[in-house]
Image 1: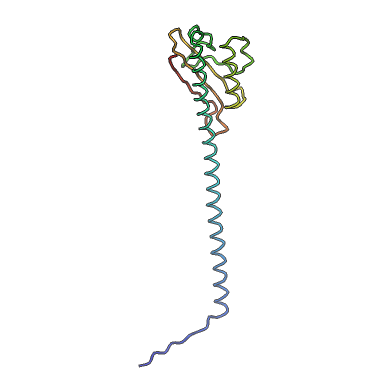
Image 2: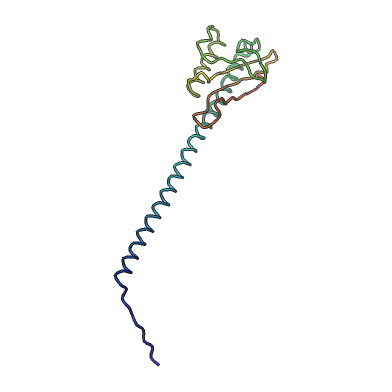
Length: 167
């Protein structure tokens, strides 16, 4: 028994429908790719914001250690409370200094605090929200607080770190 197969040529109408379907497939693929790239751009922007916030926090910690080291080098003045910016208030918040111009003395302690405030303003932003506070007691237990505005980096408006160390 012989088998016969019949080959039919596709009609012109069928060809046009098939070509249109591939164009739609390409457009859908481009749309999906564009949405994926937009998502990646959003993730990148978010990563940059959180990276900036992390950088600011690291700078604040480093600058708090910087001040504690300066007070260790000048321990007698720190114990005499010459570095203090104010008393400890409610909630453990120390009265702070937000401008190097408010420190008018010319002692080593005053110069260290001025340099420290200038460094804070350079690293964390030269705004009114960038402030520093120090409180040492007579036993040499010192607390350093740094406050800055982190809203541009996606954090809270007022960030504060507190470092306590015995000199």
